[in-house]
Length: 467
Length: 129
Image 1 (cartoon, rainbow over the protein chains, first blue to last red):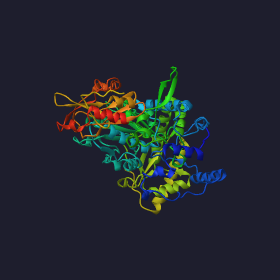
Image 2 (image 1 turned 90 degrees about the vertical axis):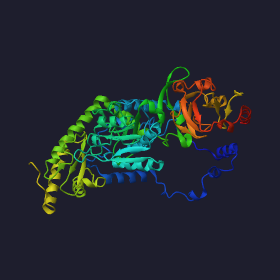
Image 3 (image 1 turned 120 degrees about the horizontal axis):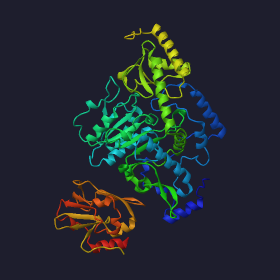
């Protein structure tokens, strides 16, 4: 659809109709001293050829390393059909389909997405997506505070096992609204929140956040944590990996009552890593909370002639109508990413996604075996069940190891020390279904060589106990 | 012309209030308000026991067009809410002064209603609009 801007005559007639002399006077409400009186500092526009060249140069700088890094973004195989279809002209927009009569295809696709992600999470309703997993969690926290009006609490338990970037995003978005984020420490032996250490009388709580698998890749005791939250009148917000959810209990089945809100990062469902984005966030909830849900929700309905149709629903709660009291300031969903994810899920089917999840787990076990065979390398949480990633304790500095592995075209993992200094030299490593036996063996070989070399020149390596 | 019963008091934001014999005040939205909103699809009421200030937004009515705040016309404690509205919000459209009542309040000040408009004043406000 071509974009047709207003002509000068259109603008003049609209201004005359509302009795305003010029566009500038529409902004009178904004105090003059906070307005920017100069153009934004943007570089000159580039031609298509120049942009192509620039982006290719940048992409080349990333290279094509064999990826063992996870920590929230995962290198899964994406079938070629996914983006072949998603980039067709009929789908190729991220914009919200306001005009239902001209957007039935897009709306139906979003409706299918909502149905699929709802099924995967074991929840009752879903919206049409949010920006990414981290902002989806922030929206879930705001939603929990709105929905938990009976408890009238603005306190949220946010364990340290939740992704550090997610926690920072939540802090940024909700801290100015008087919402208190209470950290919960993890059991240093198991890398998970120990439900038995939670207080008997925690005081009023709006929600408890639980990430499954957590940032360490470990499996939290979601049943006990969900029951604990509900026992204390709090909602349970689950942050779930959608691939892991294919073989783990979905948030809707946690504990006796299930999670109340489930959010997560949609990237593992058919979105390439592409230097960090764009990704998309998903959000599901129980039906009783649907009116507190932010963002777009597509509904199926019938038209005046009784024919099936799809429409944006619950718009009365959104910002163009409800202004400052809207359920969120989210205006555009990540439509194109969601299109790809929907095609990806449809191609794989529930059985296919389950096989992907099993393959991830099997590869991660092989990887752990291969890497911990190296002298001085040990799992940080040896007995913790994990899905497809786990942290390793290293006998060498993590940064130096990553540099040395990088020279061999291996992206070795993500150091945990910046966010968890108490863990020392550790590396969070991951293997998806896309890693081969050769990849895993190569990593093990290079790790052994690098550790041996560093150990010879630097500090002595403590012998492995029991070997 | 919408209905404006003589025996009620009114706020500028289109709520009505009635002093009941038991000392409580029943609150709802006016016939004019429901006409303007159109078909209501959802009503959000405060929890029982909550204290509302006068003119505090403590309820929401949602139509297919918009979600709008409903303000408490007097200060007091919410002692009863119209539970039937959860499943039948259309009662407000059908019978705004009867079955479509929203909450009952125990007022902080027993004379609180005196500060509100009478039917004549509210009728003038609606005609002006």
